[in-house]
Structure formats: C-alpha cells, structure tokens
Length: 102
Image 1 (spheres, one colour):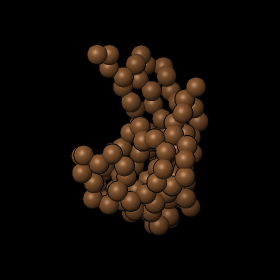
Image 2 (cartoon, one colour):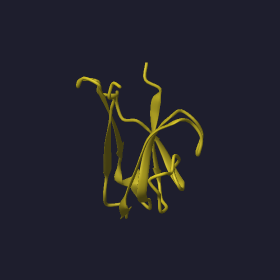
Image 3 (cartoon, rainbow, N blue to C red):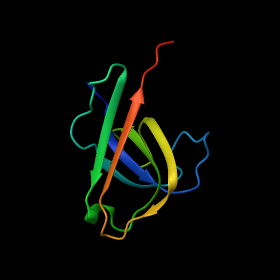
Image 4 (cartoon, rainbow, N blue to C red):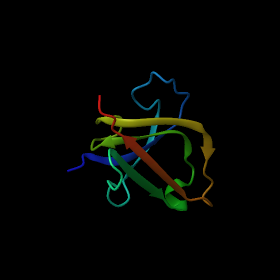
C-alpha cells in the first residue's frame, strides 16, 4: 500500500533546509499508480491540463500523503525556477524516490 497520494504545487523562495513547501497553492491527486518496476525506486506522476494549470506559478512541488492544504507527511520536495502558466500549457511532473540501503 502506498500512502503518497497528492502532488502539491507551491511558490516562494525555498531553501535547501525547508521541510515543507514555502507557499502551497494547489494540491492534486497523483495520476495513475506509482511505478515500482525499478529495484529500490518508485516513481510518481502528476498531470494538470491547461485549465487546471491556468494562473499557477510553479516554483516548488512535493509529494504528500493525504491531508488538507499545508498538512500531511511530505515525502519529497523540489524547488525549481519560476514557471507561470497562462492557460495554454499543460504540466506533467514526474518524481522518483530512490531507497538506498544503509
């Protein structure tokens, strides 16, 4: 059973030390099922159509377990350069988590 179920988009200037999104703006369900085909890796994909993405400014994203906005367990967080969506673009984010044995 996989608890990660939400793709979360945020904006704000993030630091490497942040363990939450700086400013969560949208939360969407993961598209399809997690991909477990590669040993010790799992990939998640989130898709937003042009209507869903319209007006969003993306500077960071993360993978969360269920929860309301700004809550839940954060499993992955990435900061990127600023992207603004004007209603003519779609968005697909794919994130892979690798588990390294100690």
